[in-house]
Length: 196
Image (cartoon, rainbow, N blue to C red):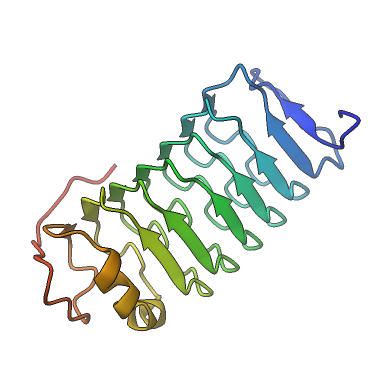
């Protein structure tokens, strides 16, 4: 562990995070955080990536109950279940994120807000059961929100109707995810997409 209290993760095969490490910095050599790299790590509270990390692999941080803060300034893709069941996760910085995989943030029960200015695709159940989520901001790049992206969270969508009305671009593909919202100034097309 460095003098500043951060452990550097290098992404080597079989790399083990030492017991007691709570803050992890991703090494500058990595562009991908491997699948299941930190899976079920009960101690990690904070992760910081440099801007060359582009992808967070599937289940990379699944079931990390203490993870509260993630800074990923260059990440463009978060694969399926990457942060699923991170119940303490409150802060995610990901301004370049374009594709949010299936169940990527499902059951992140402490997540209250997320800013996704570059998001294009939000896959099935990406934010399912995020009970505290009250604010989500999309940019003009948004193309698709898949069925059930916010499953079991109708209260969020009801409260966010006005915000969504001002942030969703025209001609967005929404697959039966917002049927109870009235957004008269936007065109919605219901269709089927392949799952990952």
